[in-house]
Image 1 (tube, one colour):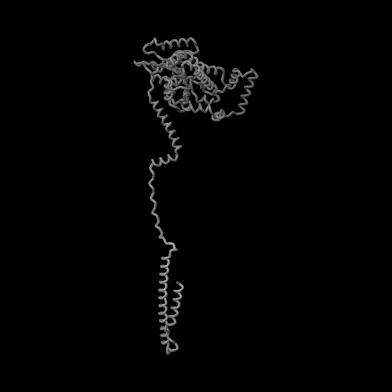
Image 2 (image 1 turned 135 degrees about the vertical axis):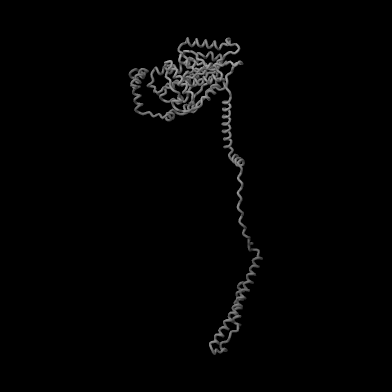
Length: 470
């Protein structure tokens, strides 16, 4: 269709040009230049009019062709329909943030195992804390008679100059017990009487004299005889033993320890407490009383070097307590409790030490050994409040706590480390570095003793110790 339209335009243009009447130059006579110019203007106007007519015809043909194309394309079925461009989507509105409860619920549903473990851990911890606080808030008082008289007696066998002995005696007296502290010298008796408490009494008993032990036990038995107080008889509630482990001012190796040092340590810290407890065992069995051992555990659990006396005493106490439990199980004396003590923060230690030292200077008495300041004052460390120990001791006296109890900072941890960790690792933690020269010198000195006396006896050890000190 387009080709036909263009051919029609060419034919019409040629016909119009051919049929247009142009002035004939042969018939015209140009007499002057004006005649020639008029002729040329006539020709120009004729050509201009013809060209305009041809352009109009081309425009008309073009309009007809475009109309035909639009009509044909609009009515055809094979041509895809044109779709308008969709407008851009509106900006997405921000979804409101989910609430804390919904977010927590979604997280819990996706992490059920972690949630269950956290709930068990937190629930158990909260229950233990609640039970501990409830137990601490509960009032602990000894049983009394209807008239208010005290009927429960506790024997506190410990050095009267020890701050722990003083602290426990004051707490037990405040809770309604009658406290007896065994003493074997006038200075210790005055130290107990210096507390000025009507229910804290010294009990004169010399463990080195069998006659003194028998006499004291007879008097104590008559005190507990129901015939003396038929309405409100006294009862022996507990026997508390505080066998203090030796703590020399300067750590000494086994080669440097003399026979006297071993004898004094074993007699003071093992033989005397065992003899005292043996004398009270019949009374304890008849009254079904409890037996409490309070021993430190931090240092003996690791068995460090230069602490042979302390380690040996701690090992002897362990064996003695285990044997005593097995022997008394059939006699009904089953409440034997051992307290493994850690570090304590006792503000009254310094006062007790100063008071004991002042009484010793006043009496000009050297006592049965050297006095050393409290561990908290020497090391400057802080530990568990003594109130926790007081509460545990009361619960053990009345039978609420049994077995082995850990009280004090680091007690359970040090005991576990000493039992589970290898000796090499414990030595590395303690910073032990044995030099080859020192080890060889020690070996040579021991060999010399074997060659001279047949065995490295205590005399040879004392001689070597004297040479080193010189």
